[in-house]
Image (cartoon, rainbow, N blue to C red; front, side, top):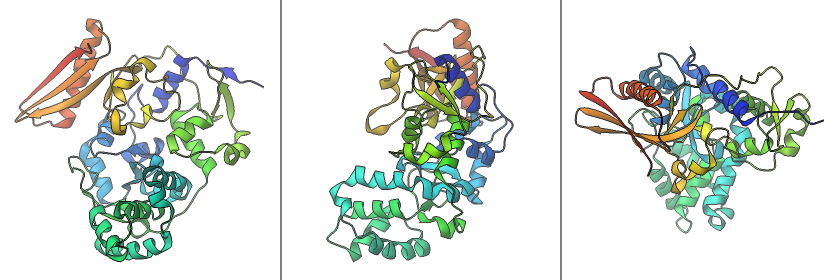
Length: 366
């Protein structure tokens, strides 16, 4: 039997509520990270901004401290991309998302990665990683010393795909840059306590639902999950989108009121809220996607206006001054511009509360 049909507005407000973007929450950063499952961390700063825009009284040093004491780690994860994930969730779900990393190897290296002797590469890499905590460049050089005829990039990526790795702080911390050192997850975090795919699907629905299996596949970077999830679907609520797509949800979860007020929110680069569904129209209008999703997989920072992406933003520092540049997709009334400026000023304070001056500049795309 077809489920209740949900409007795009209902899906939007429900997504915002579950993403803690209607009201900032009083939640510890570890708990917030686990609720969101993981925070994409292609570059170090965005996860900090992602928590700031969702939590009350969040400070940058809170997250840095959690990385230092190994409660949160930076690691290759869903879609074979770097994420911040709690230590517990990493060890619980790493075996579940491992196919996404295998798929990443095939996607990036094709035939160069197809015939590698994985067991031999892991036997070479594992002791080196655990005793030296090397950079990826050093790992490549070490592997090529043992296998000089093979592609060093493919070998290192194969190790990254088949051997769960984590980065060592200060990698992944605010302002740390892109240089990183790696070791094995088990040596850093202890033995894994694996879970299952349906458990991860339920966690995904709690943070991004209602959603279909294709949405879940988009978020994980995995394929052909329908048969694996089929036994678990009977325990879920079924809705339909305006286009007739079946969407699943947890029985205990609620659908947000479509007239819920959605305040201005600044969303950082690569935030999973923009990537977690096959059809992203619940959060970003299709006509503006190319302004946000750029070449080489880059996803730039965005501004939510009345719950949907209404512009982009970036911050620039010049000696002692800090400036926020906002580009809107279309002109907005004065009260909206004032709200953007006020929230933008708070964002600048989060970036650097010791700057000599702050400025917010708002323009529109041509």
